Image 1 (spheres, rainbow, N blue to C red):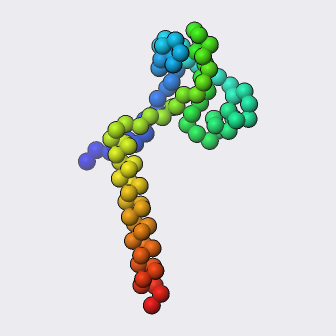
Image 2 (image 1 turned 90 degrees about the horizontal axis):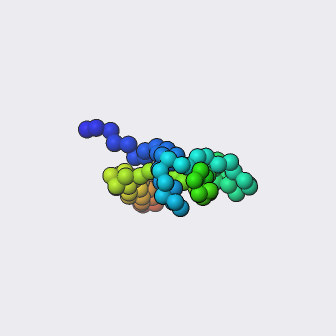
Image 3 (image 1 turned 180 degrees about the vertical axis):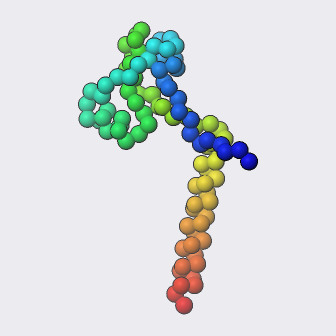
Length: 96
């Protein structure tokens, strides 16, 4: 069985500008205020600016595929089921 990646790195500098739709015109922009610094440091979302039209906003550097979303959902369901079973056994059999 081949290993499937859950997340893929994407370089937004090569994607389309959301405003003018030109390709390859985005470049990293510095954080202007405390809120942008917090978002930049705590997530995989970075600030970008378009060289053509001047658009400025956030773009994600990681992408999810359909297969990766299914894998994440399966893991969440398994964790919830395991937690429920552990709680059930602790409450019913550990008290005796």
